Length: 81
Image (tube, rainbow, N blue to C red; front, side):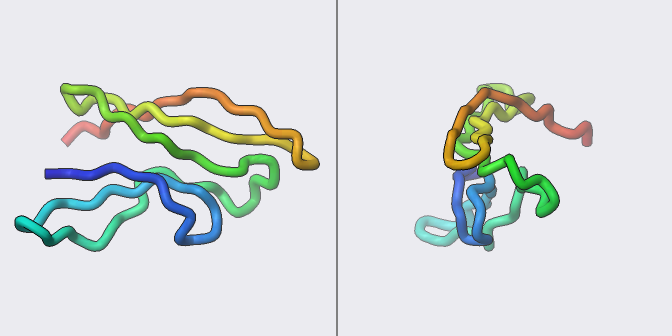
């Protein structure tokens, strides 16, 4: 019922989620993890992977300066309902 994906629709690579509404219908994507506009060395986040129990969302963080890039893996824990 949910699709997590990365997109640069807002100008920087960020992570979104969309809910399946039917056989070929999806809700408007909502940003899950974004990039603060005041963080000049953070280039983007992507490659989202949700754990089977839905507790953690792992993703790649790309950062760098002067076109020299590096990356790391980070995660976010789902908020308690």
